[in-house]
Amino acid sequence: MRVLYLLDSLNRGGVETLVLSTCRRAADVGISACLAGFGDGTAAADFHALPHAFFRKRRAPFDPFLAGWLRELIRVEGITLIHANQAVEALHAWWARRGLPVKLVLTLHNLEYDTRNLQALNFLLPRLDAVSVVSHAAQRWHLAQGRLRLTQARHVAVVPNGVPDPGAGRRQPTVFQPDGPTLGPTLGMIANFTPVKDHATLCRALPEVFARHPTARCLLVGAAQDARREAAARALCARAGILDRVDFCGSRPAAEALPQLDVFILSSCSDTFGLALVEAMLAGLPCVASDIPALREVTADGTAAALFRAGDAADCARVLNHVLDDADYRRTLAARGQAHACRHYSFEAYLARLRDFYDAVLAA
Image (cartoon, rainbow, N blue to C red; front, top):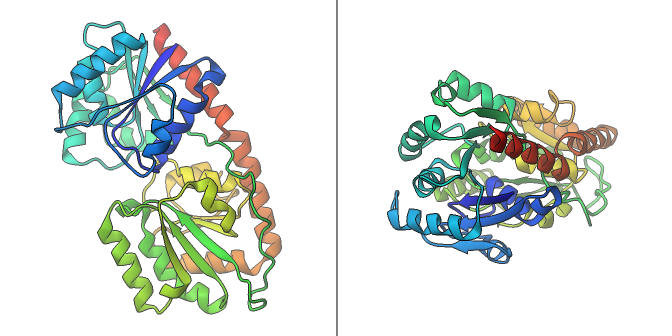
C-alpha cells in the first residue's frame, strides 16, 4: 500500500506533528508513506529529512501547475491512496488523480473554515472516496452543520489521533508546597497562538494562581500564527504585572517542552481532538483542560484531566489552584491520564486504526 500524505504547512501544529510521525512509522503497519509538501514552516527541516518527501510551493489558491506536479508524482511513485488533511490540499489532489486508479480521503480536523476552504470542502465532499474525523465530538458537529450529509463517500469513519510517547527523559515532578520552597511549580500550555486556543483565558487566570503560589511560573509554547493573539496575551500579562513569570517560548517540539512542566493546561474554546493534551497525558503530567466536547471526550468525561468552564478565567484559576494545592490529587490525575492515553491514544493504536480505515477504503 503506497500512500501519499499532503501538507500545506510545515509548522509544528497538531496536524503536522501527526503526519510527520505517521510518515516516520507507517511501515510498522505495512504502509509505504510519501509526503508532498506545498509550503514552509518551523518544522521544515524535520519534513525534509523524511526519505520519501517532495516539495513544491503553492503559487495560488488553486495552482494548476502544482496539480500537474502532483499527478506526475502519483504516477512515478505508484501511489494507491492520497490522504489530505485540508480542503485546499484535497482539491489539488482531486484534480491531479482524475482518471487514475487512486483513492482520495480527507480527514476533517477543523470546526471553523475560512470562505476559501469552506467552498473547497463543499465541492469536494460529494467527490471523495472517504472522509474521516478525529473524534466523535467532531463528527457530531459536522453532522449538525449538515456538512457530512453532502458526502456520498462510501466510507465515513471516526479515526482518533494518536501520539508517539513523548515522556522519555521527563524530569521528576517538582516537590513543592503551596507557599513553600523557592523552586515552584511550572505550568505550561503547548498551542500555537490562534483564536480557538484561547490563551487569553489562561492569562487572565494566572494572576490569581500566582498570588496563591508565589514561586509558580508558566510557559506558553507555540508559534504566533496570529500575531495579534500573542500580542494580546503579552499585554494581559503585562497589565497584571506577571510578564516576568510567563515565558513566551515560541515554537518548540512537545518532547522538548513537556519535561520542563509540572502541570499542563489547554484552554481551547474550540477543538476537535487536543493532540497536545494527549501528549501531556502520555508524558505522565497532571492535566487541566477546558470543558468542551472534544476535550471532554479524550479525557473520559474529565476523569483523566481536570476540566474547567471554557472561557471562564475564574474557574480556570480555581481548578489550577486545586491541582497545585493537592499533591495526592496531582499524582492521581497524572496516573489516570497516562493510563487512559496509553490505552486509547498510543501511536501504535492510531496506526492500526489508520490501516483498517485504508483497507476498508481500498476494498470498497
